Length: 510
Image (cartoon, rainbow, N blue to C red; front, top):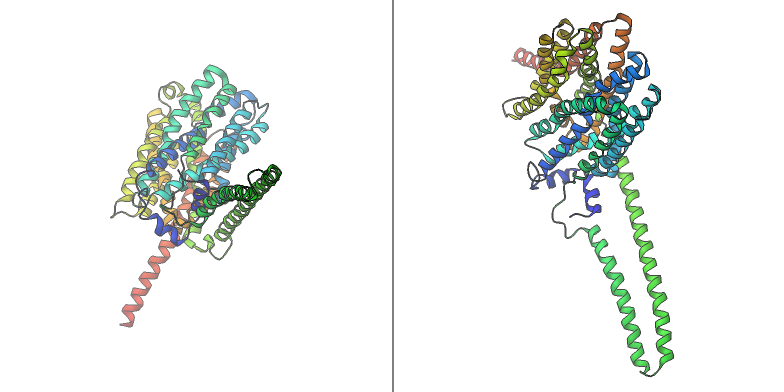
């Protein structure tokens, strides 16, 4: 067992020394690292899986509150968007409190949001309880789950992230079935109460996020202080007592007045000394926490606005623009596929095997397969990432053209497999900025994804309210996705042009 001081203190040290300490540690790429994968796996089931299954509740809310599709879709999109938008601010929590504490608090807030949403009287109430509260709790638990897997793995990062994020696919399949059953048996309000109780398991997942210990540190000054002070106080009390007994012996064995006076003096001295020690401990703890909060804020601020700002990395900035346009194209099918199925009169076939379940199951295999491929030494992670993005864009464009269950199932399978690139996002981010800036950088990326998820589903709902079709919303989102991919290609194209220009200049000079 490691003391909380060691855990928290080590969790935030992201300097070069830490990287040297992490490499030889036995838990890197093994040991407790696989427990981190398991914890992150269940976090993805409980958070991302349940959010991808919100199409079930969206239908219930439409029937209950009789509001427009565009307004009702804001509930789901707020929850998804805020989960990701709060990423940069959750990075501050991680730098200050640690991944473990942040995830546990997030689990409590998420559960509270689900429970309060069961008493909603209108859609606007759900904006606060489910969209904001549950979304904030989800964000506080999600980012630590991704960051901790990145800290525990080096050689198998893509595979580990792929395995952990398969929880999204499993969760989408399981949560869709669970919410459908609960809504049918107990109604959507009781279903949200039960889901709130299930979400408390996020606290258990957070408790498993043990920071990498620095190994054997018998010479740690902080640890010495904590151990020496109690021993010193005990010995001081004992020495005072022994000193009193010595004086008693020197004064003569028959002097009762002297004995009573010494005992009366000993008790106040002991009490006063213990009070001083308690006050000293409290003062040291407060000063340590103040220094920790200050250091965490300084690291967070420098990562965004200081000399070490991440925005000076042009490729990372292009990655942010890609994230702004990309995520909505993946979210929209999950939110609106149940409605599309009803419009095409495919409910009977969809009830046998839901299209969202097809996406979820194939999504699992896509993440693992793409992770294994990206870890191969002869394969570039960026090439795999870009190829999967192009496949997803093509699937989004083709989806509105399919009006049969078989055609929709094939496209959904393509969407599920190609969207497995999400497991590569932490790896690509770490390659761009380094492990020491992963928490802040990935927070920015998921924040951009959150803005995309926040605006995408309501936009699709509004387009349907105007045109009575979802086709145009898919086409427009596909075009926006293509713009995002073009941002990723700008920097490589500039490099290729510069290299060709240098070769031409060298040839002309010769």
